[in-house]
Image (cartoon, rainbow, N blue to C red; front, side, top):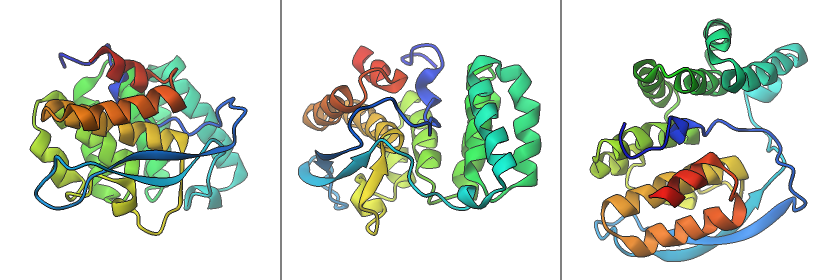
Length: 219
């Protein structure tokens, strides 16, 4: 896993509310058309919010389960070995909730269990093909391997959030951070530095303390 500092490259499951004074911001960012000319970058505008957005089926879970999930999310970073069996059990019980697989992925990463983290990332991507964090987690694995063409396949040649999710008008900051990180590294990998810089600048503006932003910064 050379080229990625420590194991923070998959820490994209953070769905906690950030201590931000701004509740929302309209952000201009690069948009890449889904045609073969992947070097063309154009700007669009959509809303990036810092409060949590409605999210099903997670929001329909019993309150006690959601509280347990929040505790396990934190434990995945503080004591990942302890969190792993609990998250495995929770994900097995609620297989329609991708967040639990994502929390498990983070726990494996933080425990240094790279192979299991990669296997879990693949499972998430296959089980929940429309789940943004599943796409970005999986894409980052191939970017590390130096296989940028696989990123195009993962995102179905739609290297922009509005192309991926045309009905959505807002994204949580953690969603944008994970996507922008993958795109910045993708454009670096193919030598398209204008696109990489645009995404990197947006990360520095919106979420400079994120481990993902710091990772892109070192590249």
